[in-house]
Amino acid sequence: MPALFPPWSNTILKLAVALALGTVVTATAAPMVFVRTPYATQQLEPRTQPVQFDHRHHTRDDGIDCAYCHFEAKRSRYAGIPPTELCMGCHGQVWNDSPFLKPVRTSYFTKTPIAWQRVHALPDFVHFEHSAHVNKGVGCVTCHGRVDLMAQVYQVAPLTMQFCIDCHRAPDAHLRPLDRITDMTWQPESPAEGTSLRRALHAEPSTNCSTCHY
Image 1 (cartoon, rainbow, N blue to C red):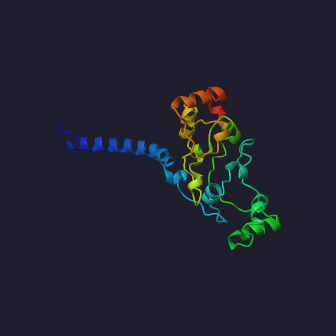
Image 2: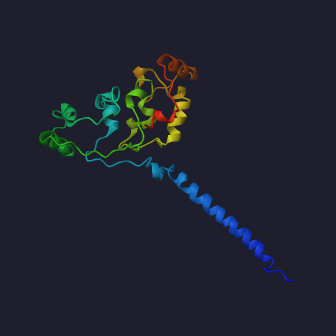
Image 3: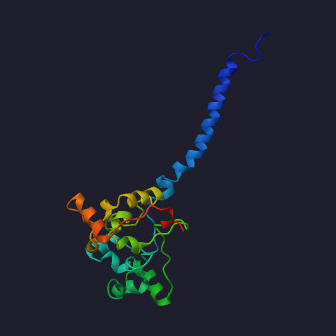
């Protein structure tokens, strides 16, 4: 009795099965890979702000510490955006007639907050506490990068769950003395310094899901 299907049909069947399996694997893996790309995490994309604020000038030329403007970082979940009144503390006298600062003056006199564009944003289901990190020795540069070298601020770290978990599992390399939290150029004298700081500051971050998701 002749075969119902020709011999080449076996090859076609194998290719079809392989294609179907490949499609399923690709459809599953592609979104997981995509959300980790800089395009999805919005890394390295400078944000255009309503005021041309240059961090390089304020931090390097004028020596203004991060905590002067972002004063909530040590005591709150949010680092905070400085109110216009803080800006006018200087700019009421310095560059007080500059056209670049017109939005600042308008905000101050009308008591209307400036609509800054957010650079670092985590999903609503993620809880991140600035004070918990800052007071345990995690410096600003760890997550925000060298802001003192940015004309326009952009996101440096991917801020993915993997990024956070890697730090929680091995925090030693990211710790520094509390008086060096805002120092962008500080480097440890030896790898052992991080271990000593972790013990001294009792920095033992949890990797339990409920730490960040609750």
